[in-house]
Structures are given as structure tokens and as C-alpha cells.
Length: 350
Image (cartoon, rainbow, N blue to C red; front, top):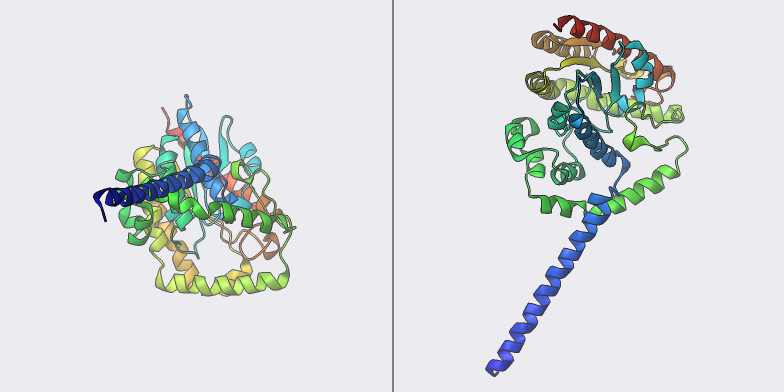
């Protein structure tokens, strides 16, 4: 083979390499345009992004903050109506439901920096005492990484609370997080087709509704609820025996971080638990978990209320989510607790 032929073969390799890089670039650009920019993703994930944007907008506002942010999981999403809470507060105070599906203490760490910058007056942490921490979903970690929810410095500080597995999901560079977006359009389409065919849920405005983002229309069939309660009771029993301190440790750090960095009041709330579910659990273990949070509140000097027992089984739409009457009862009770907290905070001001 002549020198010229060798050069031609080498040139062909360069053409293939450039074509490959061009295809990769086009792929990443498509992901950025469809998912990262237009938020074409499952609605529960989009809500997380919108909550972060909402907090950023609040951080840019001027004047005295009298905002109350309620954090929690889908139990809070479906169980707290801020339209019921607000009339029970002092003039000028307003509450916002910033919960999202599958969000617990570990997931709250992802919005903690934005939460602090928003300068809330009160943050409500709603805990299900019988549920432990859950790992970060890969797509949620990708969102947090790409959207810049957490900085490298903050991530390093919180590494012990995320744990090594979840830290590894958050640590890669932004391009890697963008690559993880690849499945979002398909998941979003699947979620849309699934939910649009179900008569019991609705998602209109869910991603940007920070007052009353409930999504349940109908009560689940009794047979399905009974099976869910049994499954959840089994997982809760394991948590209460083997991992009772997991969530508690992170909640303590969240409280410390909030009080140190934004001088806000914190209200720790134990969310309502379905009586049918409580009946399958050890009363001693449940009381021990409740006492642990009560003690944490006392040690940290924060407000604490136990709403575990305020609802009846008929106030739930399924095994865990308050529905209709339950949402109204819990929201009024939460509004009363918040009213007491706002009064106490006002009295402390000069």
C-alpha cells in the first residue's frame, strides 16, 4: 500500500470519527431542547423543577417574608389545601404546598439551598412516622444535577446524609446528567397515556399548583386498599425494627440547616396515618417512632404537632392519602398549628 493510500484510509477514519461526534452532539442537543428546556418529562418530575423555580423567584423578591412552605410527600400533595389554611393565619401570611410525590427527608435536601435563599418565615416538615428514607431515583438525580439544584460544595457537605449510592448519582458532570435524560420523553409519554386513561386522577395544573395540588378524584376499590395496607404495613414493620433512625438523622440536619442559614421557624408535623394501617403495626414501635420526633423537636426548640390520629379510615382515598373530608380536617388542624406558630414568631420580633 502506498503512502497516499495510507493517508486516504486515515482520512476515512477521521470522517467516521467526526460523523460520530456530530451524531452525539445532535443527540445531546435534541435532549436539551426536548427535555431540559421544554420540561417534557413525567409530571411528578416536572413539579420538582417548578418548585425549584418558584423558590428562586421568591428569593428575588424584596420585602419582609411571611411565607410558609409545607414540605412532604404525596400524602401532603393530596392532603393539604392551603386555601383552607390561609384564612386561619394572621394578615399578610400565606402558605404554599411544596410537596411532591415520593419526596421524603433525603429528597428535601435537593431543594434545601433554594429554600434557604427564599427566606421563608416558617417551614413545615410533614413526616410519616412509619416510613423511612427512600433512595434518590436516577431521573430525579439527573434533574438535580442538570438544573443545578445543588452545588458541588453543598453536595460534599451533605454527602453523609445522601449516602454513597445517592452521592454517586449526583456527583457526575452535567453532560452525564443530560445523557440520563434520554428516557424521559418515553417515560413522559407512558405516564401521560397511563394517567389519561384512569378516571380517578387528574393532573391539570399539578406541576405549578402550590396551593392545593391534589390529584385524586375517586376513592380506590376496597379490595385494592386492603392489599395496599397489608403491603405498606409489612414495609413499615421492617422500617420500625431495622431502620428507625434513618429519616430522623436527616430531618435533624434539615432543621439545623434551616435555622442556621435562614433564621426561620420550623414546624415538625407527623402526618395522619390510616387507622387500618395503624392497626396492623406494633403500638409500641409506632409510639417509639413518634416519641423520637417529639424529642427531636424539643431538643431543637421547634414547634411539634402529632396529627397521626386525627383522621378516620373513611377520610382516606386509599391506604395513605387523605381525601376530601380528610384533606379539609387535616388542613384546618395544620392551619391552627401554624396560626400558633405565627403568633409566637410575631411576639419574638422587636
